[in-house]
Picture 1 (cartoon, rainbow, N blue to C red):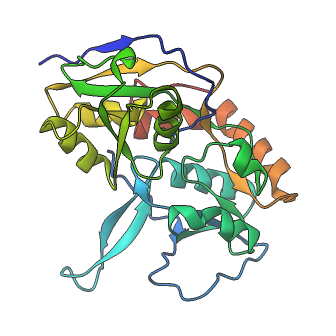
Picture 2 (picture 1 turned 90 degrees about the vertical axis):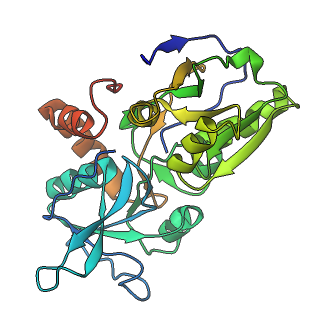
Length: 280
């Protein structure tokens, strides 16, 4: 069945949002997971320590990397769009990149406690988060989409429906805000996008709200599911979180501008999201 994308109106209060697959890796980056590293990492001037939650492909995910000495063993390797971007930023800062794996709700705490220099996990620079940490300029724009069987579900039909979201994602917060306007809307939370799309596919829920570029990747696997774009007022996107008053903020913004100007950002977007991506 041919997939179709629709643009439909949605009259709702502005929700500041961002993004929360390709399993490609670059072994040049040093990746340290919480499972292999005990205690807090030592932050020094030669290392850029990035905290992330690798459960949101293609932004960040875990793939297995076979050990050269034993083909039966595989060690975790964190890869993704955010990882590759952080690697480019670290190179421009003259640093090595070290990545630590943390639960999503501990990312900002890692910054305030000095366990990491930056946090990247498709983070939206929301007002509440800005009270705790600082953010870089937005590096990637995103959209919300409503997915359902044959694309039958429209924004105006969301009342008294069971809608799924990926737990911890920006779309989860967006959907929760919708319940203020649509009290009959019921939200189901799923720990992975595969579980979320499976639930739509078997009729467990009426539909799901997913970041547009992530939805596009999954629609290739589910022939009967289609998507409708849900426009919101104002810009949406992801930014890099830093401790408040971090001296790295200016250098990171400069690095982001340079990466965009050089064309490397477009290359990363094409690699991880494909042609349907939104350029910043």
